[in-house]
Amino acid sequence: MRALLRYQAALLARSQRWLPPFILYAAFLGIGVQGGQPILDSLGYTAAALLPVAAWLVRICVTNEPPAARSCVSAAVGPGRAHLAAVLVALAAAAALGMLATIAVTLISAPASADHEMRVPRLPAGAAGLLATLACALLGTAVGALTAWPVLRSTGRAVPTMLLAALLSVVVTGSPAQAAVSGLVTGSRSGTVPMPVLPLAAAVLLTAAATAVACALTSRRSP
Image (cartoon, rainbow, N blue to C red; front, top):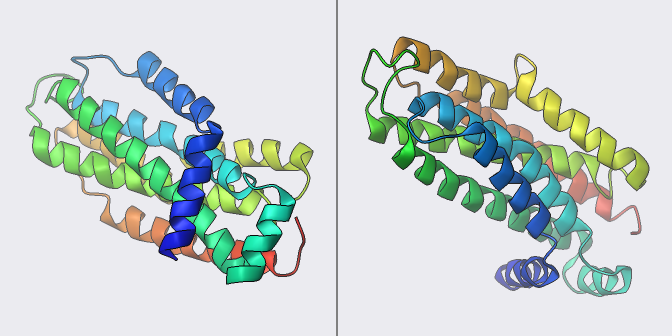
């Protein structure tokens, strides 16, 4: 599996297709996060903005190879393992990007509540932000896995579906990403730091299930 992960990571890096989602994420943060803003609000925005980026990265990774190359890799290691490696590399890239952004936002934000009346400890807030960011990266990965090949084969349907699913994952009540982000926003108002452990656990389960479905379908559908 290590060789597959290195192969997929090299494909992603050399293709430079990761640049648009990375630039989009940087633009989101440049617009929505400013130094001196309440830390939990900024961390919630940072986490939420990562979800569509993670979904986009999954789409990039699972479609990076030419069909002939993918067929060779699938024949050597199995189509499910080959697809899993692509999804895991996308998740790792999204998580790494989100963690770097979370650390930066934690350092530049004001350790205060939304009304700046109460102090919010920076280190626990940063830890809560990291958990929320991981939850959003995981759920974005699930969205990407269920809206890209082999689940949806038509680009015309897959891309709008991915965008809509990413949006709903952030705003619909009951979504792990929505729970994690809204917890940070609510905590900013009260001056308390919530730890979104349950949303993170739910995101892990949903992502594992979504990835398993996508990997199972790879053996039944050709690229």
